[in-house]
Length: 86
Image (cartoon, rainbow, N blue to C red; front, side):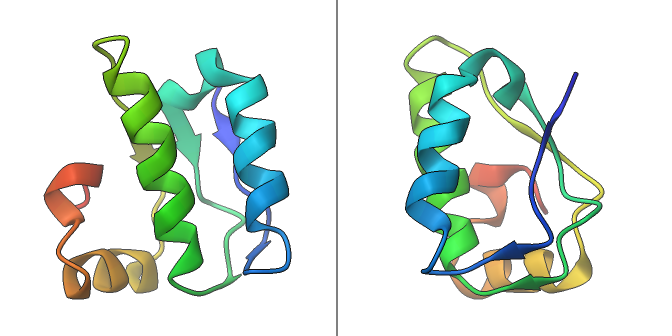
């Protein structure tokens, strides 16, 4: 079952979200972004942190239903390839 991001990811909740994901690390191989509507670049930091943890286990994340804004932010910050959003 994929790990679902909430509708809002900002500085206010990003640390709690990162910790929740790390507690459920097995589900991070698929991340459902279908509910994500209100976010900023902090969402990239949490996705990259999760990707790093999974890479330590020779695994990677798959981001499902990424909104266009997330793809654009990842491209602007140069992390599209790292997150599989290219």
